[in-house]
Image (cartoon, rainbow, N blue to C red; front, side):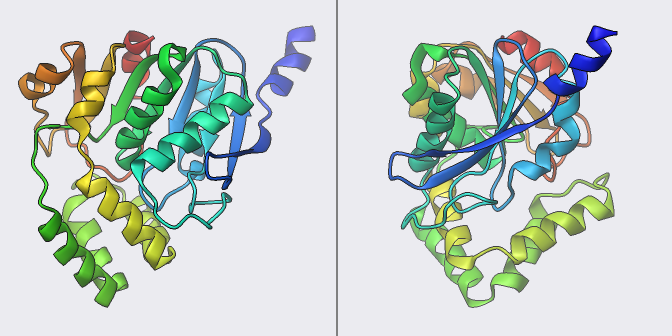
Length: 266
């Protein structure tokens, strides 16, 4: 009887805000109890609500924290440049506010770069990383001039170019139309300058040094559309491993599929 009364209370989300290093307010929610905590970091132009369907399942046995990175969701939008390093500070601010001393960081798409930066700042409080649909090849070169050209095209026709980009690269044939439509609607209605700042910094981000700085397990969950370079990634982080999901795209986080990865990362 007592368990039946208490259990729903433990699953109720508590909300708050934390000040990032540049004083931008970062909104977060925490649900459940248990260590290590799992911190879920969303992708480009999305927010913590994209994890909503998965939080209840994950929170049955652990504390689950979601947050809105600066410029996203209910967090502040006064930052001038939305870098992966600054986003890493957002995650640290929330972890500090909640006094998390043992956690696994989960990052979807752009969130993969964010959790690498957060791990640098959180040190031995992080016991594992789970990148989802990201960091498939940390040696893949980026050309800032090419990035700038693509950003210029998006700035000239943000809605049209962004819609084309999303539908060409982010969705798998099995992606439910309702999910694809939600992502497109969310992204194309997002503040343009924040979106382009974050995208440019994500594309230009050099992940290899971040891999080399991380000594805890890194267990990715990637689709098979873009091959994961196991050998290349392990040159920078020998502990890297990945679970490959057939038919996967990059449109929606898949923490239920990540449960084995979470177990190994812990």
